Image (cartoon, helix red, strand yellow):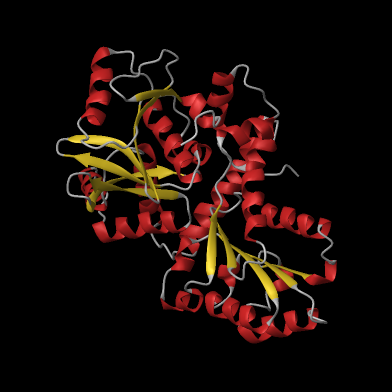
Length: 400
């Protein structure tokens, strides 16, 4: 098993801090493997096997442990002395009132608790108040481009070809470890069915699958474009597909809940407030996008924008789209007191493109760092705006 050092290091740093560790992310992004790697770490630290309780709700053998009483009884039988225990619980959202149950385990046993979940809806609702201030979230994504190179055993030679492959087959760990095209296609089909059919259509109780997939195709085709539920409704209605904006909004929310889709809200730089209309959507994985709409070499600028957006999320930034009067900034990345501005383009060698991208940044009247990211090798920095090569950013040669 290939280690994902960044995540396992964070998990180790959280060990025994008295907070419940909640590991979230899209299905098959590596959350379960992270628990396995963490268990290996515990054993190497001389934690006994009988001090570790593992429960995976994707396995049929744990189907009877989805209520408070049965789970407490099961774990109680595993706790034999006053030793520090470690509870590793996979897909915790399968437990009814999971937050209440996990908090009960937290106060009942001398235990360090780690749970995973594949649906952000687990953080909604009043029941989460049971863990308010008592948990820390670790967000897990499919592979970054740097991790993809490691999983595939590639070096940085022919990096453009490797990047094109990354965009084509996507970033899920299982896909990246597969070598044959037939196996890659089979894994992508399984992922698509697992996430779309199981986590979205079935759990979301979607009755009109045809309408849902039309909405999904629309938003996947328009990543990086300003849009809204109402705009999607109008477009679909104009093509003869009758649907309400509330239904579209529900479909979008279900995809976001499953971590398949991310909404990037707009932020008014002058007014210093988030705007509720016309945000952008980005997908968690280009391989699944290709599975739904077909692999296309066009629109590469917005695909690269999608990759940079995910990179900033991996770095722990809160990311919004910037609105500055009539100008738009692709990304505002904020973390604590730090704020960064980004324009992303396939290339800026064309003079009109260069002026457009630079003007969006030059019109911002503050002293926070501003960057232009393209695939160009020529340094296009100007007036304090730093031009960065995309691969230098994705390979962490640039520290933000």
